[in-house]
Image 1 (cartoon, rainbow, N blue to C red):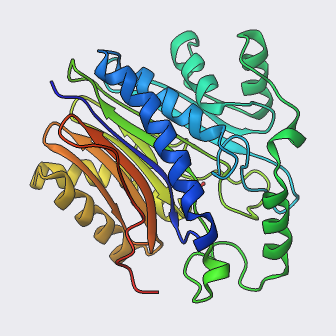
Image 2 (image 1 turned 30 degrees about the horizontal axis):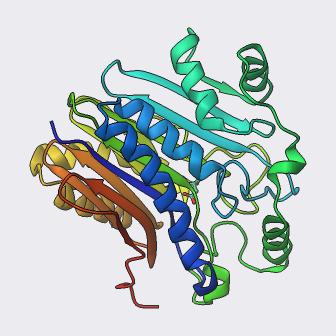
Length: 308
Ligand code: ASP
């Protein structure tokens, strides 16, 4: 089987001055993950490493650099799914874990449970030697400035993504990875700080299996965008339904996003790998993504075809 990996680093609007550094961050991550896949490594290892790299990249909204809640705190969500074993591990609302994706993997591999929240997750991390970090060290100056600006804006939660003001629409940086390995196994991993200025305790789509992240023996999927819409659409399952109708990954992805937009609204981007190929689709202006197959070199696109 030819391996494929696709990464995203969020959907929304990427300010001009941050585009180049976003490109560097996602390409560094895909190189690391691709090395694993071309050397016969597993899809699950590749997606975990890719997401770990992107969590450590402070410009992205995951791990270090996560967006802040309305109270100025960090609450990160992550999920990993192994299509081969149907293993799932996830965390919700953690604030002191350096790499939520590593903790998710540990939960998947070592726990009888599937998803842990807050203190329980952090306790599991301590017991299993997963790095704990001071919350302050995950908070960047940029995150603080963005929250300050957000709290002064009108419109409230979620209004930034569809705003006509480009400054206000700045929203991107949730990270995700989907892959198929040489043995034909799929895996997906997604990690986020959530949505800027969210209420404390709010949970997005990222840690919900079948909504923001999904992998089985036919596909691997990761979503990004306003989680409330993605959850209502159960977007990963919508993609799977669409694949049953037309197994072209691009067509299925487009149709799933259309179903979400027509019935629920919102805005999202997604990445998908199937045995027939891969897709990266969006309803937002930008989707930061990169893909790598044996036939192509690194590919990267902010997809500027959406009118401003
Ligand atoms: N989907 C994430 C959430 O709602 C945010 C994002 O993708 O930017 O938590």
